[in-house]
Image 1 (cartoon, rainbow, N blue to C red):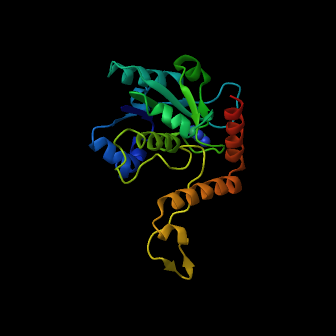
Image 2 (image 1 turned 180 degrees about the vertical axis):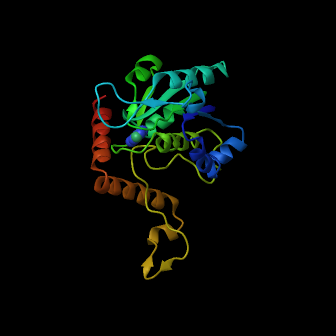
Image 3 (image 1 turned 60 degrees about the horizontal axis):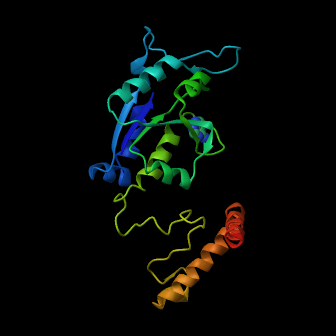
Length: 237
Ligand code: ADE
């Protein structure tokens, strides 16, 4: 997979892409990261990338020209078509199913903006997939792009070691994870559930599934309701 990131702050990505699983995935050749500074495509003396909104109002708006030129220049570097992704609080809410869908693509191009927002013709003209990572406003799309890149890259086949395994994680099947414990067996009076110490794998699997269901019901009634709806749908088929 090739990942292009268009941003005014490429240096923000160094820590995330240079650490842990995103770094290892690049070292293994599963993914390559290409950062482009949008400001390099500014054509005026001030290297402008934003301007005041027509109609008035606070803040600045990212201009069309620099972003269109940056996208077109980067896309010319490689013949394979890219999935364009614009990070914005107006986008579709990012979740594990979107991560799984993106992990099947050969090329992703992220556009991370700053300031109050984007000229709407960027969406109209470039027709990107618009993604939001949650109902809150960040100072820019960079952190959101990092969240999406991290969630996607760890799904690439071979990115996780055999010991990590993504299969039974939260959300893979719509349930939260069961509780985990490691040594010691007792810590400050708190003990590990007996069933995990016995080595009866069938019993352990049963206990874990029950815990996952209970946790989901308690903590995420929205996910639990989706499970119930799925059950009803399955039974009616
Ligand atoms: N840019 C600013 N806030 C954002 C959010 N919540 N998700 C994606 N991009 C953003």
